[in-house]
Image (cartoon, rainbow, N blue to C red; front, side, top):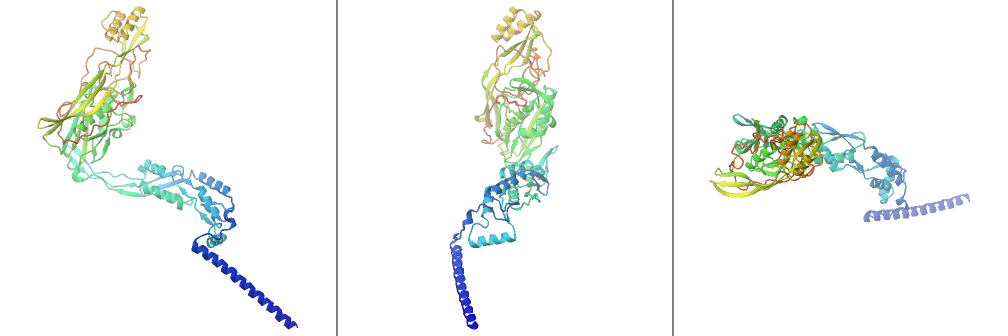
Length: 602
């Protein structure tokens, strides 16, 4: 009986085992079918209810931030705090030349926090069965890290590298020539190694995004070897004078003379390769005392002031005239806001900060050499190169005045000055509209005469201060009436009569001030523009008999005065002569007007 029951129990157990095995096989087959379908179709047919799980799985990190067990909001806050904390992180950007430091803030390192948190939430919660199973299994043995999507602002990083390139690069020294007593001597250049800014930015971005572990902050930048420019054969072809010009500054003040000589020396020896552009301002700047400049007379808003660098406009003007005679392409040129007298009208070029510059391009197929020197109060520029223009062709430039405007006189009255004092604060500058014409001659016959530039110069009035201390009211009324009528001769005569019946007004010693103290003017016609004069001093001065200062009018051209024949050239090589412009209100152009009048005392 026992044996029978035992056999029956064993049989029931076997049946249960068989049934269970059948159910397992069915479940297994069903599971395999589902997995196969998912693999074949690529669809997430087993997506579970916890797809939208609000908590990130344990063991998940975003970059170096552990976000396991956090909600979406908590993880977002944690990652944002980390990103803010690295703003002061300092990176060492290296080349084999040198290195610079840059903070995360310098490069605007940011993270895509939203995308990173979404990826962290998805770990173990989305995807097909195999993917989810693998992620869950991995989390039991090790952490899973998702990208924080860190990156740099590429434009800002590129600008940072550009601004510090001199510390991580060695500039190539181009092949060049130097002028000697025997001619020109070739000087071989040296290769350099310059940071490749574009590729370096991508290298930095890749490091921050994929390699940075918060401990190693050194980043290798990309550098390229740069060979010296300048073909030796072309450089050795420099020997011909293409254009030259000279102007006189012999009556300038000591400070202005020093400025002219200094700026000239900074341009001397420049070699310009084909297609290169020359900037006068860049060559002579910074225009400050650290670069050898001194105080000299300058105009600002129609007033005479002292300014560091006064006189450099005469340097730019002299170079301009040499350049146009060499028939180089002028890419930027501004006339002064007030007329200058060291060159004919429309033959000038102004310099004022970074907004007014004289620039030109070497349009020859070979290099050019610029020689600049001063001797005996004369500034000279000579452009050398390889002459390709026909020998029977010559050019000249002539100035044509279209119109002139009387600047008038502005009178003011000062009760602290003796009656009869007639003190000139600033000399007059007439308003002028002028054009420069280029005349091309072949075998002595004029072939063309074309307008080269157009220039407008603002009128700037003469300013006079009249002393009225104790003056008779009737005489003052006569002076005021003559002043209102702009009858300057009568004003001067009346002042002389008040001063004691002399034939000349009472003179007052010059006062060294930047702007004269003036009372409300009877006639106000100040220019809207401002420039700096080439050879004027600041302060209140007294009019003296009009004796022209030497070297004040016109120019000295080593191949003839302005308008005479210069070196020949090929038709069509001249640009439009750049932009003819005037200063805007409040601008200051360095060294504009020069030795304009005997009324301006240095």
